[in-house]
Image 1 (cartoon, rainbow, N blue to C red):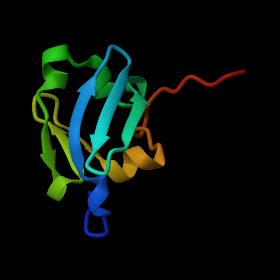
Image 2 (tube, one colour; image 1 turned 45 degrees about the vertical axis):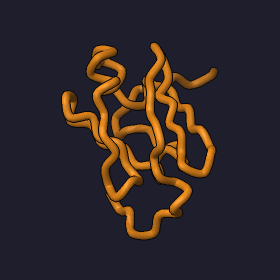
Image 3 (cartoon, one colour; image 1 turned 180 degrees about the vertical axis):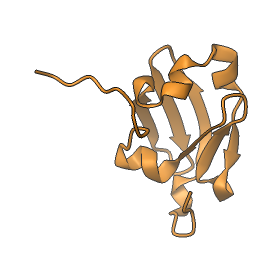
Length: 91
């Protein structure tokens, strides 16, 4: 995870999951919401596993130790799903 050029306002303040979304609050007041389907490990995790996270990467990342998942605010802001995520496309 490359965090050397991060904007200080893009540090993780809070993270939570609903049944189908990951919602991340940033220190500058912005909120990012992305579909859990983008992150298969989170999607398959239990609510307890999803709730067990820590801030990582000098504040610019989130780590879920129970499922060995790491996400960066940079990737979330870019809208980057996990490699191999099965995305639904409109036809």
